[in-house]
Amino acid sequence: MANSVTLFSIIFSCFLLRQLVCTNSQNVIKGGYWFKNSGLALNNIDSTLFTHLFCAFADLNPQSNQLIISPENQDSFSQFTSTVQRKNPPVKTFLSIAGGSANKTAYGIMARQPNSRKSFIDSSIRLARQLGFHGLDLDWESPLSATDMTNIGTIDKHIFFKRIICISFIYIHHEIQSVRNKVNYVKDRGLLGYFAWHVAGDQNWVLSRTASQTWGVSF
Picture 1 (cartoon, rainbow, N blue to C red):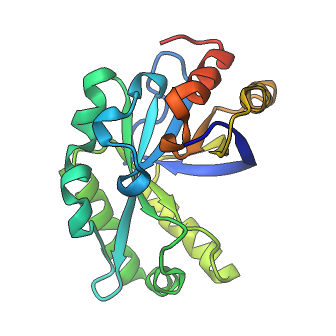
Picture 2: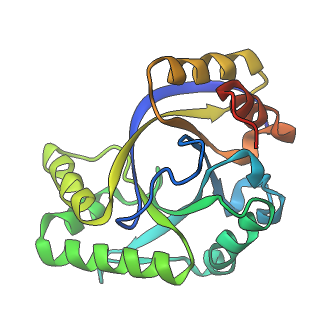
Picture 3: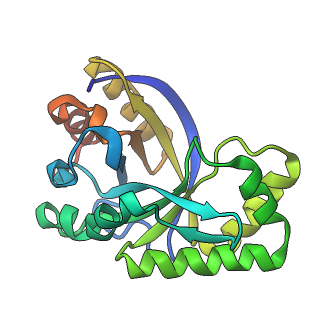
């Protein structure tokens, strides 16, 4: 686990089941991704350092075009929201879909037709609600064509309430000043926040604490 920012990009992140985005009093996104095999136990997440936490990843069943959770992730995903809210009751949780290892071709095929898109959208909303998440995050990385990009927009309009312009960065090794620089960049340009891949990469929560303090809001 480590402490630095080596990937830095402005991204458009799509949140929510048609309802909240920034409901916390600070009106800022302080987000982080977690996945089960990251080496960090779910109950060891310091959720007090975040306003939004992303649980990664739900999968697409290419036969049914419905969102599913793999058997090995069932328990942790179903407990995610209740667990992180023990330390920080206001924190919002999101079920993250796809990810870098997802089958890009399967997502492209699903998104082409209205019926298959509807099956995906309906099942995504239903599953997120069943598992107690506050919203959804579609992490469809590197679409294969311009058509895929168009279809992503179609899905966004049906599932997500609002696009949030944030900064994304990755924890790699110890460079606290780099984190400060990135968060100050966000603030100076009037963006709405930041989130990191992934929280297990933050040794002793040094970077997450630095990012939160640099923003100027204490929890």
